[in-house]
Image 1: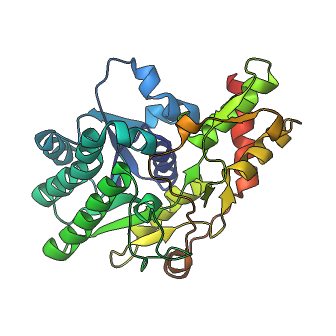
Image 2 (image 1 turned 180 degrees about the horizontal axis):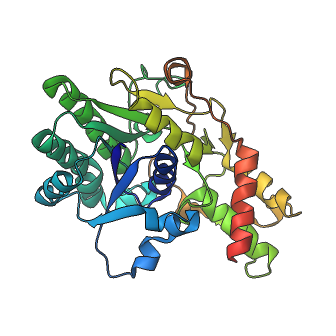
Image 3 (image 1 turned 90 degrees about the vertical axis):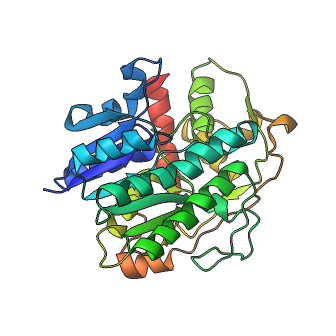
Amino acid sequence: MKTAFITGITGQDGAYLAQLLLQQNYKVAGLCRRTSNGPEIQDHRLNWLGIRDQVKLYMGDLMDLSSLIHILEEVQPDEVYNLAAQSFVGTSWQQPVATGQITGLGAVNILEAIRTVNPKIKFYQASTSEMFGLVQDPIQSERTPFYPRSPYGVAKLYAHWMTVNYRESYNMFACSGILFNHESPLRGIEFVTRKVTHAVARIKKGQQDKLFLGNIDAQRDWGHAKDYVRAMWLMLQQPKPEDYVIATGKTTTVREMCNIAFAHVGLTASDYIEIDPAMFRPAEVDILLGDPTKAKTNLGWQPQITLSTMIKEMVDADLQRV
């Protein structure tokens, strides 16, 4: 039986990855920060999936190298997945230093902990399409130059290149998944897809009148988190470590995504959406579109859940919550 350790296990991707690994007969442990919120707040995604009692949580912090070393010495994992980050792009402009420390240096701390405890541990780094930013190619692949447009994207790029550096410097099995946008009912409410589906549910129930958004003409390549965590796992099952773009290869505007969500409850999106100029980013990323050819060829991976199915699932989940 293999053992996996997941940082960010209480997040959207961490919870779905833990569920997948349990189905693959792994022992699963994860890192979570001690906070003033009760455990039921921190564990709500694991509880939603019904797996909280099947995973072991360790209190620690990506900024505390000593705690990471002690935890890895106890867990002795075969695989480590680093999913923890300050991952909201908008917040990264308000908290650039914290984003750089947690999202960037935090990845180096876990790499250094692995190198210290057991350099044979396989490592996965959660990279992001935000590293492409001001896109240099119409369709972004593993060969596309990076041009991040947010403190978050810059911090992720540092973590990405440090993962490459540890792979090449210490012959470690360290790889990155350059994941394009992926959503689910477990997505945080601060992200645009969940903000939209939550608002649709509240509007349908008469608890909200309008949905305020920024640039609804921005285009994103959206997939389902369940599909994307499967790609993470597949990367660590390969004979050698490589970096992969994980995407659907299809792009959709925020406006079109809103139309799907509102239509699912019999409403017209344009009747409820208002544009708030304050919600535009200081440096906008207008379009992201990934080329998943390498992942399909080498990993045998392809997405199974469509955008329409995913958005309807999210709306239904928010109707249930509301």
